Image (cartoon, rainbow, N blue to C red; front, side, top):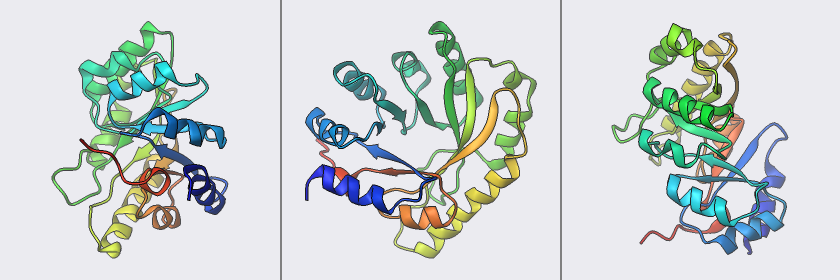
Length: 222
């Protein structure tokens, strides 16, 4: 089955309120263009330099999502074009995104990454730290970012009961934080679920899923 066929099959099963991010990390330009010609415009990358290189070479109506862990010193390379940054897990990073966005007279949309997995390898904030951040005076002074939702990554396990519980946990946190609205924070998006568990994630309340291998095939790691 071709990339466009796999893409359209997945899209046909998604509820209208769920956004699909096609995860194109490590994939060549021609694979992305096949998905693009099938009408898909939202792509996710986990390395800023690779995303910047692809942005340079591909159509400018593509919406690029940064889904990987973000190093502050690399924010400047994507600040002019990135549509959504999924993995914001501390205030210093948010402040750097705001600073770089200001240089391009933009407001960059971000998701706060909440740690829901039991693995130490996963990044993310504790829910209480997210609450403190949103309610802080320092946060209120940021004019060039907007928090539009939360992101979480479940534990890498075959135990779907555990994964389900972690997804439900993120939805519960989202519901609690949703009432906190400021000029630069309005929660609308819950980004959770990948190729192996996105259907479960949607059942648990996800509004944005990150799917790569089910569209493009296994990744080409060197």
